[in-house]
Length: 421
Image (tube, rainbow, N blue to C red; front, side):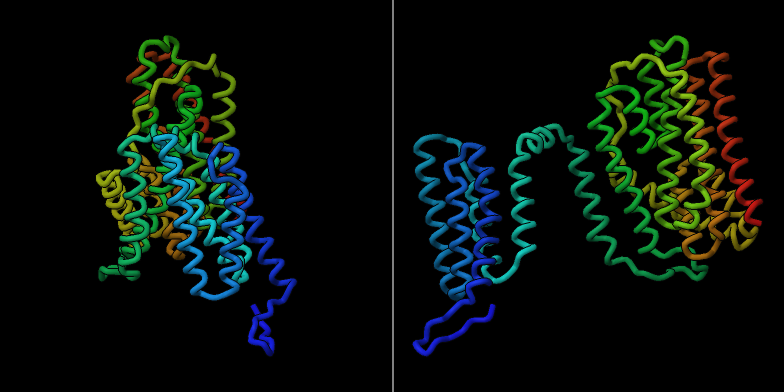
């Protein structure tokens, strides 16, 4: 702010700028104060607005006055805490912390900032108002989920920056930072889907199958088969759940491909959408009455052993794909993707997409790899379903449906490639 100094040595502040800063300071923390008052706290809208106003005025005066004012706020908080302790054993630490942050908002507003204090005040108000939901969510967390979130931060913000961004082998197969970025991306997607599965699975088997397929379609089918047991006498429910996990797996692989190579994602869009539509339509036609969903015992994808195993698997598939491309051309990558889909369609999709992103293979071949690896992953679930239902008639229908879906997707992709050529 520009300050005009008068002959008497006093500082003159431009009225319009000062008015703007004061309004920002008071407006931001009036929002926080109203939330505290709505929550029946002792310190409400007036206190928060006044403290914010003090911060703005102290910023206009001098840094030393800011320090003195902040000490005054601390004393005010101590007095309020002492009075509160005489009346109730419940501590008001959250409100005290919010009041200190409010003083900071006022200082920022007094120094001319608008976006930072406004955005921070809105975010803090949101966090304060979501206390019941956040508390319920925290209580419901499992230890593995907390460890998973910490591990995700570790692999993303600690390990990734220190990895070399270059090929470390004479054959130029492995770029550690690039490979680790893929691990981070797929781990994040898997963890988010795992959280969604935990949140929505209690609403019914349909939600369980959809979000389970996003995490791990093969494991989800195996677990759902085990949970249904002999209660699904005619196999219709299990067949529907299998199709829904397939729909989710197809969609996930398409998103992964598009993230690494938008051109390849465009080529795979048609075939995968057709297969998703066919699987969804059959699932809708043979749907049964919604059943209560027992807990799906899928473990968090963010465990050290799982992350390490996935990273190793991705590196092996990517290296095999690169070698296959050098020895057999694009056909080698296609063969590797088809085989990799029997183990992990996400890893195979990411490997093909990475090769396409570096122009090692064409977007069309990357799309072909993704379609084939998705089909392979779909077919892997058939023995799992059969082992559970032991019903040849139902199993024959499920197998025929899967083969028709695969044929439709493959036909659409071949038509696309033929039209392009």
